[in-house]
Image (tube, rainbow, N blue to C red):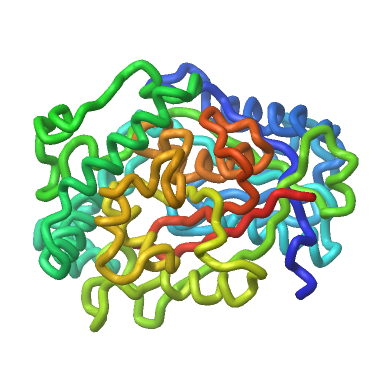
Length: 384
């Protein structure tokens, strides 16, 4: 296939993460992109492709003008919040593989601590879109929507809050080893998890992602150009987006199998393209706005069989010595919540060998978007 391994991520950059940072979203975006270009050793004037999220507040021309980028030949934005990250990267990679552009930047910048940035905080008095089927019934926030699906999963496969506790604890342990993580200095015990207040039964405080200000950016080039960059390149081996037939975002409960939705569509097409399979993964970065999404994605992407992901987690499968070290920077639960962009940057760092908790010999990485929305995923491979 023409796309396979034809493009590479050659630079990563990020701002500090926090709550109530003074910088604007534009300033944060420019800081992260500037850091990523410096990491790659690429002059800003060479950038001719841009990718981001439809939820991004900063228009492309502001980023290009403030950073003195060159003439832009390709720009795109991807919808669905947490489902957008892999798609934003994949679309810029497609443009480079097709010869439309040569150097691409993908970024996400957020002032998440501002309550007005949360979609559900802006619900109008009269709901006319698809949310009219769920919000009048009390599913007001994303956590309410995921909690309902988690309860169904526990009904089908047995109570699993202990598995959710292990996800939260393991990601906190990764964050404790990550100097950039918001929760770097805050440990979590099993007792801490079960003592936390319930937010949407069965999900407690520690099943929810952080509210983070900050930005993350990546730089992409063609694979042949990547060998001349400053850092070891990471190849984009395969890419897919997924939107299941009849899908309803976040409340996709109506299908015969509510656990075979857009992640399943994405996964089947992703593995169809790949030279390796789920058993060959070295690490994974799985979208984790809420801890049950990790369980659902482990099964959707074929890492576990149906109903087996809780036991996989309980057995230490996500740990550095486990079968698939996952969310190794702390993820959205304990590093930062930048709509999944920090999962992408961590995937690159692991394959370059400079993650905060480096996984020895890591050669392949799966990065996923949100399980509950139209989504996307990437398979990354370390360059030879």
